[in-house]
Structures are given as structure tokens and as C-alpha cells.
Image (cartoon, rainbow over all chains, first blue to last red; front, side):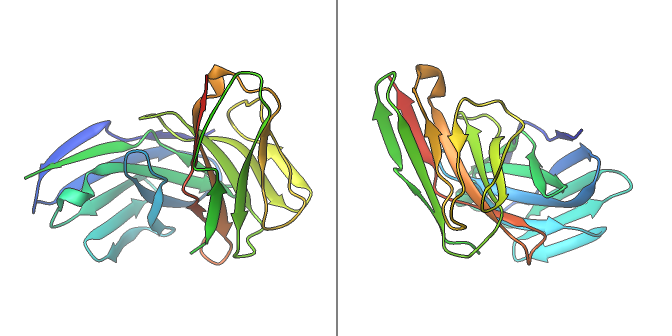
Amino acid sequence: GQNIDQPTEMTATEGAIVQINCTYQTSGFNGLFWYQQHAGEAPTFLSYNVLDGLEEKGRFSSFLSRSKGYSYLLLKELQMKDSASYLCAVTGFQKLVFGTGTRLLVSP
Amino acid sequence: EADIYQTPRYLVIGTGKKITLECSQTMGHDKMYWYQQDPGMELHLIHYSYGVNSTEKGDLSSESTVSRIRTEHFPLTLESARPSHTSQYLCASSDPTGLYTQYFGPGTRLTVL
């Protein structure tokens, strides 16, 4: 089976840096995805990691350690619009399993 | 990225009605998925399809059914809607060139009175 853990909620200040952690246990691991979901909207794809290391995409970076079953999403230069839920998901056998998500609140 | 569409966006109906939620994508993706999500809660996979004439039940048991007669179309049907079916239904398709990254449609918010 698959098990994914993320913090329920985090708060940060505009302009700051925040790191959202995700730990997972899974069989048949193919990759780890991060999605952003604003309240009432559909998830939008942010990044994926297949190999260990850091993937950078503008203000967002994602890190993976397969041996530790650990990933994090790093958000830099936070903006108010970054207030959303961030979903960690792992894929195995071509299906995605989502964590419960981390609700990020960015304050002025 | 996929162009994926869902209709209707919002639906309010009475108990016992039959409804079909439409999902279409224009990218020719073989793999498509239906998720159910209550407000503030996690996504649950209820159906998926790996291609035409292929449908499978997901991890969360659902009274809905799906069909896949054409690659681009993956409708979800509820024969007799009940208040417990009130939720958001999200359709997705996956890109085989990018580790099967899933791209989501805008969702249908269903309310059954």
C-alpha cells in the first residue's frame, strides 16, 4: 500500500521562504509530484521528481530522497497568491495517490 | 499540458435523479481518471481508464459508473442521486511523455437536495 504524510497547515509571511515536507511509504515507486490547489479549484501541477536531488522551477523547488522516503517543496519570495493547499502525491503502477495536503496561509 | 473540460461546472438536483458528468480532453491521452473531493478534504480516486473500453474502480468505493467509448470522452453517471453524493468531482488525464503527469479539469460541484 501507500502512505503519505504532510503537515496539515503552515503559516508564513509575504516575501519569506517556506518548506513543506512530505514523507511517504509506497510500493512500486515511480515518482513524486507536487500540486497546488486553491480553495474550490482543481489541483494544478507544480513539479515532479524521479531521481534524488533538487528540481528548481522559478520560485518553487522540489527535493527528493528515495532512500529516506522524503520530499520537500520550497517556496521562495512568498506572495499572497501562494496561499493554497499543496498536495504531495506518489505514483506507482501508473496511479497517483495523494496526501491530505498542507494548507499554506501567507500573511502580509 | 492537457486541455481537459468538464460540464457542468455546477449542478444542483433533487434526490433520485439520474445525472451524467461530462469530461473531455483534446490531447489524445489514453489514461483518464475521476476523483471525488469534499471541501477541505483529500482527493479520492473513484474510477480510472487506461484506454477505450477499459474502466476500473478506484480506491474509494463509489455508486457511480463510467464508460470509455472514445479516447477523448470519459463520462461519469449516477443512476439515482442522493444527498451523500454531494461533492466535487474532478476529472484528469495523464501525459505519457511526462511520467504520466496528471492534469485536472476544472471540476463539477454537485449538490443533491
